[in-house]
Image: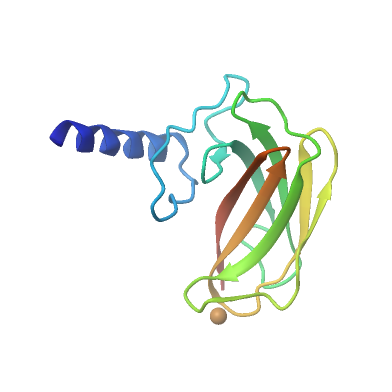
Length: 149
Ligand SMILES: [Cu+2]
């Protein structure tokens, strides 16, 4: 048992080291090394079940209450860009269990580039943006942390 626990801890530490801005794994989820191809850097954020990795750019950064956009470059586990995915983004305030009053929009700009616009945070505090990504047969989620002043 001690050996198994040690290995799990090592994987978690390795993950945090590789992807400093990664969201924490969801409850009940097994740690995964989230390896991606050599073509992409370790600066990518893995999706919760490691089916995808992405580079995110928040505009503005730090975020404001309204008018936020998020650029996403989406890759698969081999490091290849993922074009044509279905993307849905949702702003969520976990401490209070509510979302935004306005749905965000996602636009496919081709070649694995996506633009998420209209992110509205209706009050100050800690928010998440959940980005659900689906391709043929594969579905996964990214969760990004936002702090609204
Ligand atoms: Cu709230």
